[in-house]
Length: 225
Image (cartoon, rainbow, N blue to C red; front, side, top):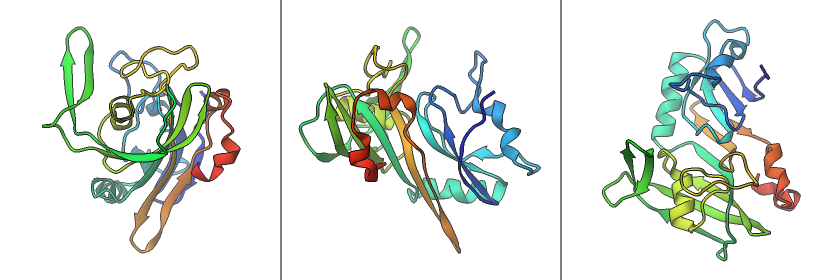
């Protein structure tokens, strides 16, 4: 079992670099999940750490874990109050002409026996807001920085597909299969969570190897990472 990289550590918090393809929670059908790593992530503490928030199975990058119940409650409240600053990098299947913008599309969950569940834009759904910025265009794809204000399920994925008009490369639900990717190309690149009477939790996650196969000159846009 490969060790999970740790991006930030102190007495009440860990930020890990979750690999793309690893579920946070154990799938109903079984199989590997982040739960397999909790014992190793104790790092000498009696309690295993607990995820404060969720990121999709496909999504790689920053995930905050609380190391005690009081910290979990405070960190969860910070996320609920939209105090956490989250930066994602995605690669969308298309070339964006605009430089930046904001997608405001409320989201609702639908399900069917055949296709399972997914999120769709719906006027009566829960409000969802995502700021975005074009980083680079290369060979029919665009690297995009996403800054979600809200934290709805599949928010960035739906906002890319329905708001920008271009789904994430490799997104099997909101786009389609793509030979260039084994997953939806989304990476939680940075996370900052403020704390009272303490420095903020702050972490950045390096781009994973599959992001480096698209020919994009990431070094030119390094500040966005």
